[in-house]
Image 1 (tube, rainbow, N blue to C red):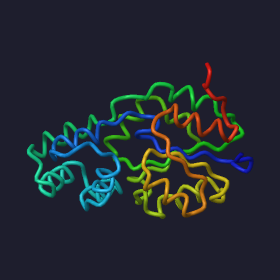
Image 2 (tube, rainbow, N blue to C red):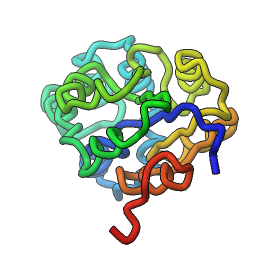
Image 3 (cartoon, rainbow, N blue to C red):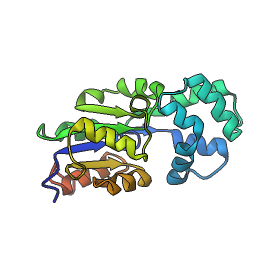
Length: 207
């Protein structure tokens, strides 16, 4: 399966890095922490889009978001919490990346902000990617097709040659519509199972 795969494109948050965003927003909004519903709400927010595509500074973003959703916290408090949403590497993330043979082009496509990327960079993932395509740098948020097209251009691969892994179903569906081999993967173990199905790495089954 997947013998024509030449590149692997990872989402970062929820696949390789633990994020506290969904439970944090759910608590502030007083709703259930449903990943897909909160993700859809998040990427539909004008404040989020502006900030995570690099068009709005963090302080203005926090003030606008608190007002937009009538959050029961100050903008300063929200921003402090927001900066700490990336909490660390998920178990097995680095090992999984290190097991991918050098023959594959490995890149990351992430909806992220400058403040979050600073924390993620410090976790030691960046050197394990050939390229990173970050929303605040490329100017597009997944599931916008522009985000995927930016990554495909940078990787210089056709959609069918790229295996895409993301923890958001809307992003997976958007990538599949462009012809990418797209799969849902929530955490390194699910990512490993997909990569093993394509013969990229060994499965941990029975280990």
